[in-house]
Image (tube, rainbow, N blue to C red; front, top):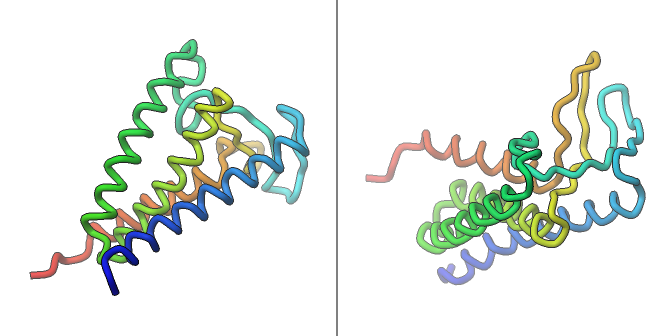
Length: 158
């Protein structure tokens, strides 16, 4: 296959992640007020939370500078990932992981720049212990990083 097709494939996966992320966040914003939740099962709720920090609300109460800091980090990551996708587009597992991370980074960056926070809505819990709420972008980033970790154990071609 031509190299451009491979790059298009990886970027298309990222675009699907962005579309799913933004659409699901839009649905939550229309259906829920901030802080509202809907119990789905004994261990899962739909909620509407706003995360002004990074993963697990890291630096959420830092006074506002973190929006620009995390946006800058996201932009640098997007540029580096796009370069890596272009350079290594034949490496399937590696590029799939990168494509998922890229889509997630773009989805959360969009929220951060347009809203000033990231919309989180998936809440898992057990016996009163709650995992921090997250979204589709966060899920894609976690799966992508896991794939990159798995890929790191592959033996390099000689």
